[in-house]
Structures are given as C-alpha cells and as structure tokens.
Figure 1 (cartoon, rainbow, N blue to C red):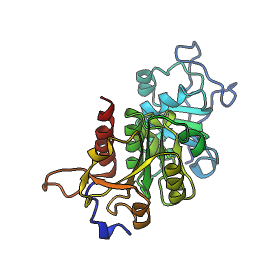
Figure 2: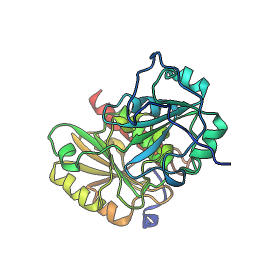
Figure 3: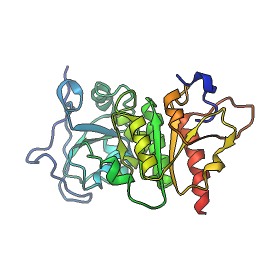
Length: 290
C-alpha cells in the first residue's frame, strides 16, 4: 500500500419485524406486485438481534437491490422505511416489512455497530464462494486482489467495489485478522459482493504460493519501493497485494511477493488509505488494456 509506513514498520420494550402473514421464508414477489405490504414492528433476524449462521444482514440501497437480483441469494426478509421502499422500487415486494428508521436503528445496531442502513436492509443467505483453484487457475489475463490483515469493513467493501469496476476475479483475505462479511461491508461494496467473490483462505502465504504456480506475478504495494506501479502493467496475470491500514505488508507477505512497487505522489501526503491505493493501482493496471 502506498507509503503506509516504511519497510521497517511492516511487521508489522422489545420491538419486532414481523413477516407478512402467509409468506414462506425465501418466497418473493417482484416489485410491482399487487399485494400491499403491511406495517410491522421490528424483530431481530436471529437470537440476540444478530444473524444466524449462514445468514447475515445487508444494508444500503445498492447492496440490497443487488442481493435481491442475485438468484444465488435466499432472501429471508426485506425491511425498509416507507419512503425508501418507494424510492427503491420495492413497495410491492412480497417480503417487504415496513419499519421506521428509529426501529431499524435500534434493532440493526445490535447486530452491527456500524449499521448505517440508509433505511433499507435485507436478511440474506451467505454466498458460497468458489474455491481459489477453480476461480483463479484457469489461464488467461487475470487480476486478483489480496488483502493482508485489512480489518476495517468499510475499506474492504470499498476494495470490493474497485475490484468490480476493474474486472478483478476475486478479493482474497485471510480467514483470521480480516473483515468478515457484515452489513457495513456490504453497503460499502455497493453491490459488488454479488459479482466479485470474497475468498477467505486459512493461509495467505500458501495462497500466494499457489498463485505463483498458476503464473501470477505477485505484486506488493509498498510506500518505500523504488519501482512505480506502472512496472507491473506488463504482466498478464497479476496478484495485487495490499497491507493493513497503518502497517503495510507484513514481512513474510512482502517476502512472498515477486515485485514491490509504490504509487508515486507528492510529499504533501504521507500515505493513502488502503482502498484509495487499491483503486489507483487497479487503474494503473487497467490502462494496460486501454
């Protein structure tokens, strides 16, 4: 990640949502249906206000609409304010549960402290990602983004959005010490979770070794690197590796990269946020096909 520290720093009383009567979980009616949604109280998606295993809340208009249009998702519940339901075109949806913004704030905050829901949320099944091998081993031009212990869900979501914009095959983060899929991450991704797989292998170093076997050049972003990001534009298969906020790449991760590069910039700014660095780097690599 550009100038994200020097190389020596890298080591771095009770309310409820209630489903309309007669609706089975997962059954939906497309916007425009003639069934009128009913106003309801707010209840949690799972025990204690959280999500049950294999399910989670998705927040935000773009993220929710993308999930509704993804046939791989099982949508159990759809909650929105009356105003947002009209704006998003879901006022006739069979699963719609109307709620006030205050009720949504109260319930969703128990699941996600960063529950900036924007007046709309969906309780959805977790997507089953493909294996790293099946997705990335096939030959051909390819870009994949790896995040080394990036834990902020907003940053990961923004990287997901960048990945979708520049055609990356996947975003990969380790199973531990990385942001899980939450409503905040989904909202920051703005629908990109539905099109770009978010893979969570147990060992990032092992994944990097596999990528090398499959012909990827492993390019690490490092603010102290002498070569600019443009030096990686000549490679057809690129695994772009970015480090944690404020720490950069860990030593072992950096050693597993084939090339360390930086993003040239003025001395007026010491470092870039990881999601900003990812966007600039992906654009520099994307230009190779322009």
